[in-house]
Length: 410
Image (cartoon, rainbow, N blue to C red; front, side):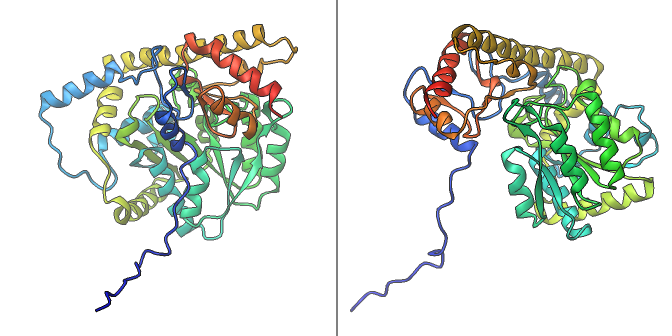
């Protein structure tokens, strides 16, 4: 008898490429060199390069244990106390958009899930509308809109000649976009470049978006974590809201509260009336139900406890200032080390002009490969490094690696 050979129904499934960001961590783990540095994933580390759980998070979790809170399902829109404080944190508690109940807020699965929910809303209620994203942008933005079948194109943002903002190109591309497009903006600490518009430039961006009847769509992943001030880091969003514009805002608490694995965030839609906000919220819930049914409770309770308790809130702000301050110190030390070691006369001051946990080094793919292959420095291939994964003690070593890669690899 000849045994029948069954061809698998999955034979047509090909091996997916490794994730360009999370794959960096896998390669880092496999490296046995003791000098290795993981500057790929944007996750905060202590000066000893260890993960950090905020003290205020531990206190909030202890409160939850003391109360004996259960693990019952949340409503589709999430924890009411979380939704209230997260909108107040973003817009300011006294903002008219909240007083007039013009914001539809639903708890999402961190920033990624909140963006994906918004993309589904765009696909369903704005068919054919295009989303404009910055060039470059966070690596997952394109995946999110591709999977939601939302068309996108890019606007100019990064100028490699100045390692700064191509503001004129950005404005020109937003002007040239079809009226009614969604313009995806990074609220603060632009990822991957660390280059933000000035307050005056934000005003001009708002002018052009209003003139073209576009819809601003903010991704706010670093509120309070970029500058150390919650209010400063929300100023771009509040500027647009104050102008009476309808807008979308995705929030994440992965960075500023260190809740990476809790997947806690929110999607906010500012509408022109409370009636419209109620309708939009109902449709966000309708979209969320078949996606993930309802969001997780643990992280939502942490946020509600921290933001809703004045003592814990003040403690959180102090811890955020500490984390932001450590990254600023590392940024300064890296600049000092590069300036002292590089005798070519190259100006490295762009590193100091950038903000947040990332620095866009200006290194190309071949140079970034040299950083990894020769120096055991793991980073994304676009030249982005996470300063949150760097210590003061490692700055000189990193400076040597950058100088070698920049000058000796074409």
